[in-house]
Image 1 (cartoon, rainbow, N blue to C red):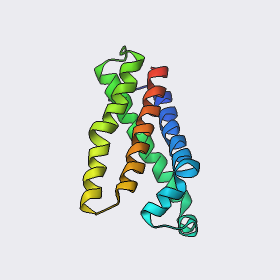
Image 2 (cartoon, one colour):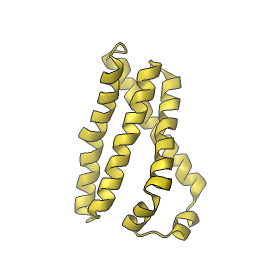
Image 3 (cartoon, one colour):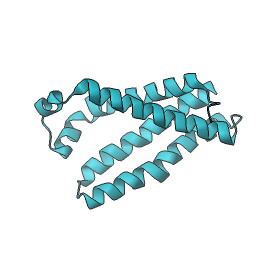
Image 4 (cartoon, rainbow, N blue to C red):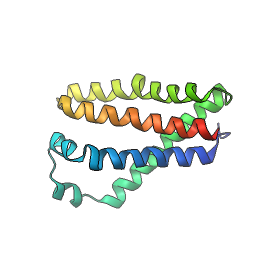
Length: 134
């Protein structure tokens, strides 16, 4: 359970966190704000240390879970298999989960595609880090 590559856990979480900063910043920031109905002032008014801090904790949990999966099923998996596994976790678990939530909460398709693409990128980035360091 604890026999994971902790450096990969930390750097994998950081990679996903950086992807989020880029995705929800210069790449999709304005579209995302429009899709969720927030202005820049409203976003800035949030408790950013708490939001970013907890987001990073969640990234660490996701990265540890991925590391645990690789430790359980074989660290000798090929680089591409690890990256595809990470992508598959997002595609098979995360995207359908947020899709279901967004359907029932009647969120827009635009928000779904912005967030779904982010999670695919997030897990792929984590997978690359874990594959490279394991």
